[in-house]
Image (cartoon, rainbow, N blue to C red; front, side, top):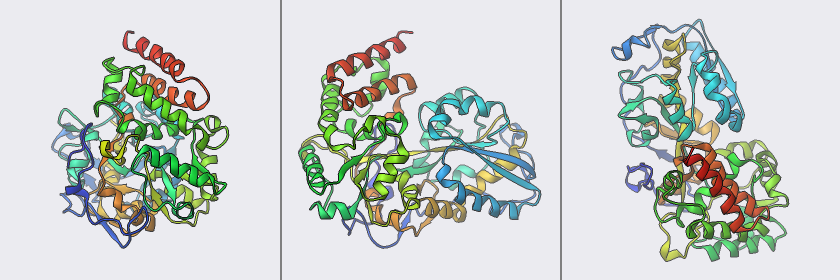
Length: 443
């Protein structure tokens, strides 16, 4: 499978069947069903590794911390932790959970002390690269744990041929949809071009519903829409890399066109969208007041917890005419699991990482959190995962916003989009963003 920065999600490796349902598939799904590689099936009394200077040698015992940002997964992870503890007497595991924005900003400093995050995660892209540079990740060579994953999906956890981390989640960074509302609006399939997207929004508005619930007041979640807006507009698939190097500018015509399309979307977001955080828009979507939630598949479980009973689908804005479309949507391999080099209990940390990577626990996590995974042998029986498996067959781009390694540059580019929705002119928003980007490039 081609999962490099520039490649789509391969049909050959992921396809299981085509969709039979409006914006979704039906039946059971068995995704990435390949033979698992070597690894402990239930945890012995100790861990050994001939490589890494014996970093993981020791007894599976004592306390460890699992640092992450997925508060919505806390209950499922607590269940898995109890299962692991039952197999390993004397072990205790705490979850240290931060909001995603705080985790993005503060996790590196917190984890490098070794006080939390014996097992920890990183966002794909800038945060992972920074954590590798800081020496936080321990090389997993010789442990057998990477062999439990689909090798073509874990490139974003490697550098220079070394597998430091394991991207656990395969997510779609694109809007999730209320199929009932779309059906009422006469929409039977995702719009295939920009005019179709705007017409869909108009049809939804005729129902006195908000077309798109967007957390424009929270840049970390607002930015997921950015992926879809640039995926077909940009002159090359590595557009964000080239913005960061200065080869492309956000004052270039293609980016100005993207900003003008954000401007066109302004009437279709909820009131005060640029001041709204993610929780209110999730609630709006769950209550049936909005037809689309402009974040991604990773919020399906949270919306179910809020009481949503309607069927889910997904749809990403295609910003070009249908004949010019290259991608239909966006995917990402993220939640990069690893073992902290500063941990004084790496043996237990590695064994817990191995446990999460095995078929049974991984299937429990996937179905309990509505997350597709990169683990090789996962059985999906979650209705929402099943209903969106058609997206495993579509041409989707690896999420572009995570190409940025400089978060200030990424924030500047994405803030320009937010500013335009908030009323700033396209040219002014672009010029302000490019000024920040130039400062970062020339520092």
